[in-house]
Every structure is written in structure tokens, then in C-alpha cells.
Length: 493
Ligand code: NAP
Ligand code: MG
Image (cartoon, rainbow, N blue to C red; front, side):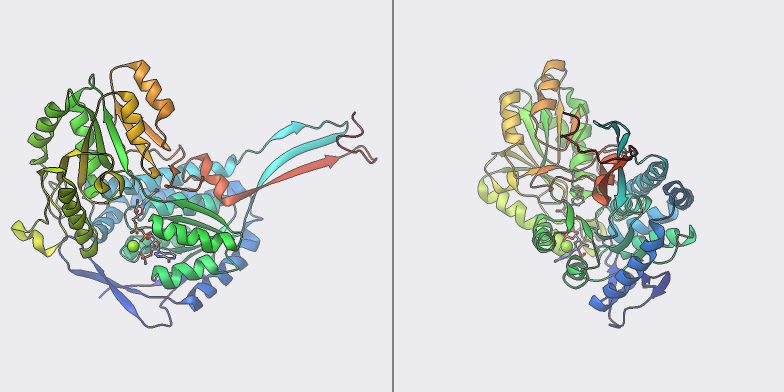
């Protein structure tokens, strides 16, 4: 049985706890490997190593740090197929999406390597003579990264690469369900000869290892992606310690369909957004706000296509919908479907656990569409994180905007319309961090900021240049070469 270990101070090692938990393929329930379960002591060792390594790393010129990232980028690219296979087998998303996710990490690595020669600050004229004024980014120290299973390598790349290129060291706890691709990613850092101690992988539970990272005085900032429940708890603990905390959490993303939309294009957007990754993307389409004049036409087009989505093991190239992550997730989805029915929504298709053709060996839920959903229903407000989409009828763009913005989350939204005026109105008024016109709610590119408003986050962003703000402090520097005391705001007035 393959054993997944920790990586601390440049060494692969088992936790002294001696405990391991199985890594399970969600498509068939088979055990793929087992992963070491760490304790607070392992986190301590990782933090010590990180602190020590960061002392030297912060002095390495950023363009030189970037050279390690370029090597990481080429290794990721070279190993794309292998990484995708590992990712799909432990996480379940279909292989095409697995490859896409690895590509996101490749893109991020090249992009962040480029930041080695940018990291621009401001140089401004001083208000006084013979004085120079500028700002520079400086690293914060040790970054604690806590990541989810749904994008196990992409999200880890969004966080670790900007942390490293700006001169920080990393202690990373991946999700318990996806330690294999995490270990493969760290192996790439190792092969790229990243100095020891700069990236440390500590496997284990959220309650033990996650909390130990959040509470550790040697960890200077926390970057977390996951559920709202855990994010809020982390924010409370880390906030009390005055740690910078970047949180990316849930979504309840909607596609708005106006009466002039190209319905065939909309159907493609809904199928991909609602059922891709079995609805387990944070940007998944979980609501469709459709103008009542085209609602029936849209429903019949959707129903005609949804049956074509083949379910099964994501490693099979012909499969379009893979399993959900685990049994408890499957049960939670089923519970929400029952809630929807009790609330009076009408089930158009799906609505149950798939058991035919051997699917009962894995965690499969049939692609599910509800209609006649109203904005006050729980299925219209709460994140289900499965292949379930709710159709809500609206009468105008204004109403759609109101319904779109009525949920606690603000990650992604989309509008389909042929009217440029209405598209621009939607671009201004939909309250989400990501917004698409004539495209579905998923499909972010790595060189723009990623994240959401309201309950989705706390104002920080992953990816893009914006992510540098999570991992750096600003230092404003004044150099006075006048040879005398010059007082700002006094001597120049
Ligand atoms: P989760 O349960 O919150 O777990 C996320 C990470 O936090 C995992 O590594 C988990 O460890 C760890 N964790 C759990 N309890 C913890 C604690 N008390 N202290 C510190 N860390 C703890 O979320 P998930 O179920 O993996 O992922 C699904 C959620 O992530 C969804 O809500 C989804 O919307 C959100 N998500 C958001 C984005 C975004 O960018 N907005 C992207 C992807 C996913 P264990 O695995 O060991 O429990
Ligand atoms: Mg969890």
C-alpha cells in the first residue's frame, strides 16, 4: 500500500502519531493509498524549518527566486498527464477537467515566475527638495495554507507560488481527501531544488493540523479556501492573534437568462456550470434566473441534453459526470433534494443517488434540475455542492439582479443577453467578484483576481497580481539627501 508522507525541512517523513487514514477513490470505493495523520508536534517542526529557511530566502533576489518557479512550471507541464490521473483518481472529476486543473497550476507557475521581475511598487516625487520617496513589497514570513479537495492542485498553486516568489516560506495542509496530488506537487518543488524548509507539507485533520497552523505563533498569515463554517472559525481564531487571514469560501452562483438570450448557448453554459465537476466547483451554477417568457423553451432544451451526460469513473474519457467526493457529501445532496421537494419545488430530472451499472460502488448523484423554485427556498439560498440546479423565474433584469444579490454569497454570476445596454447594467449591478457575459459562471483565468464579495470572502483575492497583496506588506521608504532636518507638512508650507 502506497504511503503518503509529510515533507518537512526537505525530508519525507511519517508523523510520530503512527496513524494513517485511507485515501479512497470516490468512483469505486477502492483504497488508493494511506496518508499519515500529523499532530501539533509535526506542525511545530514544519514551522521551525520554515522560519529558518525564510531568513535566507527573503534575501534571495526575487528574479532568482523566480528561477525556481520556472523550473516548477516546466515540471508541472511535463508531468501534466500523470498529475491529472492522480487527481482524478482521488478526487473524482473527469479526466479532461483534471488536465484543465493541472494546466491552471502550470499557468500560475509561469505567471508568478514572471512576478519575480515585477512586484512593482510606487516611486513618487517627495514634497521636499533632495528627498526620495518609494514603496516596496516585503515578505511577511511564514504562510500557513489550508486548502480544499475540489481543486487540490490549482488552489495550492494559487497560494504557494505567490507566497514563495515574494520571499515567504510555506506550511501547507491539504484536504484529507486529496493528499496524493498534494504530495506530487511538493515532489515537483523538491525536484526544482527549492531550498529545504521553504515548502512543508503536513497532512492531517482540520481539527488537529488545521487548528495548530491557525494558532501557531510562528505562522504569520493564513490563506484558506473551503467552507464558510470553517472559514469563519479560522477568522475568529486568527483574527484574535492579529494574523492576516485570506478566506475564499462558498458560492450560490446564478446564470441570468434574459428573453433575448441565445438559448442553445445558455444550455451549454448550464450543463457545464451545474454538472461539470459534479457541481462541486465553488463557482458552480446552482441557480438559473430565467425570464418567464423563455422558461419553458429553456427547460425542454435542457431536459433533451441532460440525459446525454454519461456518468461514471472520471478516468473513462467518455464520461462527463464523475462521482461526488464522499458518502457524507452524497447524503447531504440527497437531503437537500428532499428539502426542495418539501418546499414545493418541482423536480424535472434526477433527484436520486445513482445505483445502476455498478455506480453504487462509488458516490454518484444523478444530474438534478428543479423548477418553480422561489428565491426564499433553502435550495435557492444554501450551497448544496453537488449536481443540483434550481430554475427561478424572473420578469426583468432588475428582478434578476435583486434575486442574484439576495443570497449571502457573492462569488460568481453570469448574464446571457444580446443587449449591450443590459449587459453593462448587469456588469455594474451584479454583486459578485466574478462576472461573465454570455458565458457560464465558471472559467476564471489565473491572471485576474479570483474571489467573491459578501459571505464568500473577506476582501482578499487569490490569483492575479492581487494575490501578492496577501503575501506581502508594504514598506514606504524615504531617503533624505539634503543633509539637514526637513519636516514634512511643515518646512514646505
Ligand atoms: P472545508 O471542510 O472547509 O475544508 C477545507 C480545508 O479546511 C480542508 O483542508 C480541511 O481539512 C480544513 N479544515 C477543516 N476544519 C478545520 C479547522 N477547524 N481548522 C482549520 N482547518 C480546517 O471545505 P471542503 O469541504 O474541503 O471544501 C468545500 C468548500 O470549499 C465549499 O464550501 C466550497 O464552496 C469551498 N470552496 C471555495 C472556493 C473559493 O475560492 N471561493 C474554492 C474551492 C472551494 P480536512 O480535509 O482534513 O477536513
Ligand atoms: Mg470538509
